Image 1: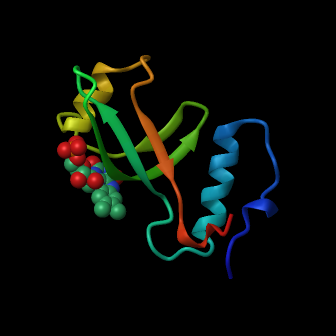
Image 2: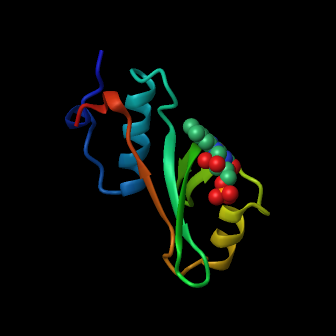
Image 3: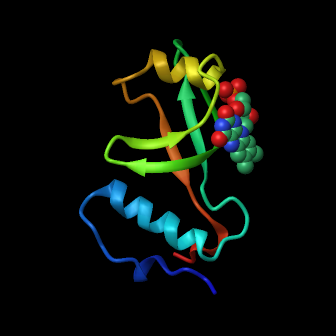
Length: 96
Ligand SMILES: Cc1cc2nc3c(=O)[nH]c(=O)nc-3n(C[C@H](O)[C@H](O)[C@H](O)COP(=O)(O)O)c2cc1C
């Protein structure tokens, strides 16, 4: 059965809302419901984007596992606090 985001109880904290969405997606989406597109930028501002699997969401933010020496790891470390990264999540059966 499809998960309906409208049925997820509204919360004021965006991280809590996102965690509720993923929990709803996990119940109905068999294929990587925690997959997210992570965009980063190099020092010149050139963007790159790739998929990661979000393992946890809490007050500190989104957690995924990766190699800190990877391109994304280096760009995230270089851009901490500069808001040069974005995370986009969706699942076909979220049925927004
Ligand atoms: C569905 C899916 C999930 C992925 N999850 C991860 C992940 O959790 N961590 C990770 O390091 N790479 C993950 N990858 C591989 C990355 O998308 C990427 O190709 C790789 O980490 C190299 O990225 P970078 O060179 O930009 O750092 C995933 C790929 C796919 C298709």
